[in-house]
Length: 67
Image 1 (cartoon, helix red, strand yellow):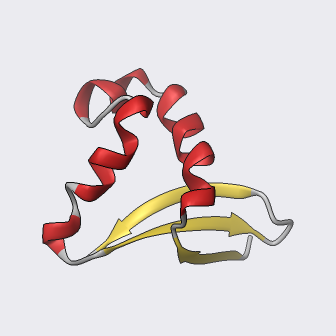
Image 2: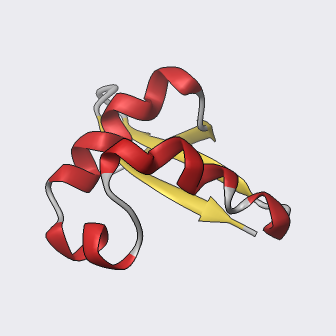
C-alpha cells in the first residue's frame, strides 16, 4: 500500500474528530473532539508538524505529529 501525506489543514479536522470519537482511550489520554483545536495548539511548543495520511485511493487513513 502506498501512502501520501501533507500538512494538516482546518478542512481535515472532521476526519481527526472521527478518529477521536472512535477511540475512548485517545479521549481519556489526549482530548475529546470538542477540544481538538486547543489540543493542536498545545503542540506548538514542540515545533513539529501535524500531518494527514491517505492511501492510493484517496481514503484518509491516519494523522501523525512529526518532530
